[in-house]
Image (cartoon, rainbow, N blue to C red; front, side):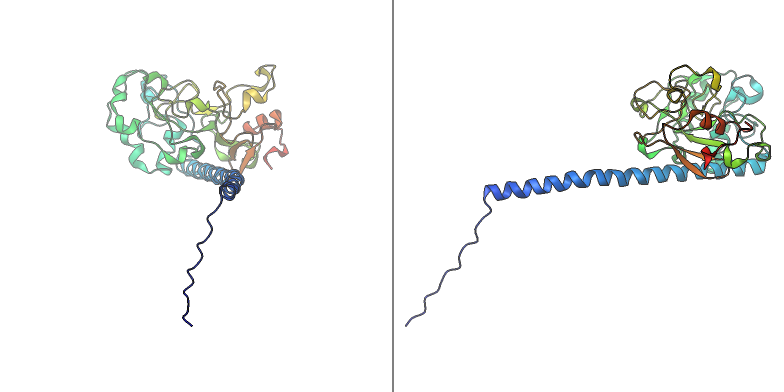
Length: 300
């Protein structure tokens, strides 16, 4: 009896309903995974920002060891004695604090780039706008990854052109102070932290009073909290000391790009902290003062 070859049965294809079910399941899984991935990325960015702050503080301590004082924000644009505030490696106190610690962050190359530019003849000397290599150089350690690639401000000379920083130093640490003169102790006094920016200004190209380049000592773009606590407006004080990055106008305020989580700061002893936006404003303010005489547990 001859054998009959039985042809293999064709495999049934997915029905449209089955295919839609699979697509729906994949969409649900993606929806569940994306927030988790975003949280991981944000956590990594927060850690990177804290590491930046530690590098900045290490640079500050190295500056202190060599200059026998903490860096300050220069002498402003007052006179030719400090090159009208423009950073110059052989002019003590010139430039912003961020300029002064550059040798301990990026090395002396970038720090000395402006030395080849002729001395400024006034605060608004436009010859400095021609130093494009230095003015356009971004300093990675001074940037928060949650705010993009960083801003280079180049419009008006009086608005301090050059690379901007996403951090601000504590303006209550005045010129000439040393670590040993911090009456409240280095573990209780804030040195620097993330400054508030409008989200619309992450890619801005012109300076403003509260966001300026690092090459010139400034009107306030490189530091925070010149205000005194009694002078704060009657609205909730947090709105005038720390607020998250929004499109609300910058002011003398701290803040970060992490939504409602808070913003990073570092103390003079090297420990970091994320400050929540509902933090006690008086304790935060006292932590800015080098010798408030009011030690609190805010720094713990």
